[in-house]
Length: 61
Image 1 (cartoon, rainbow, N blue to C red):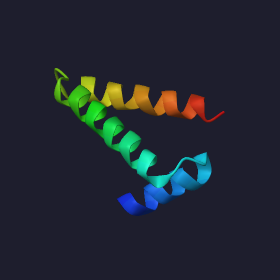
Image 2 (image 1 turned 30 degrees about the vertical axis):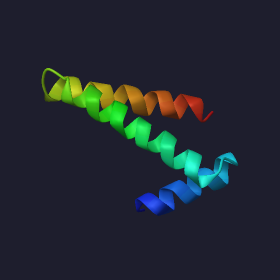
Image 3 (image 1 turned 90 degrees about the horizontal axis):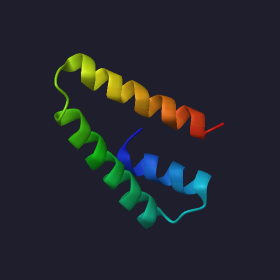
C-alpha cells in the first residue's frame, strides 16, 4: 500500500477528508521519526514501535 492508498483508506474509514488525513498522518510520521531517532539503542526503538502499535490496536477496539 502506498501513501495515496493509505490516505484514501483512512479517509474512507474515518469520514475525514483526504487533506486532513494527509496532515494527520504526516504529523504522526514526524512524531514517530523524532521519537525513534531519540532512542538510546535499537531495543529502545523497537520498544517504542511496539508501544505505538499496542496503542493503535487498543484504539481500534
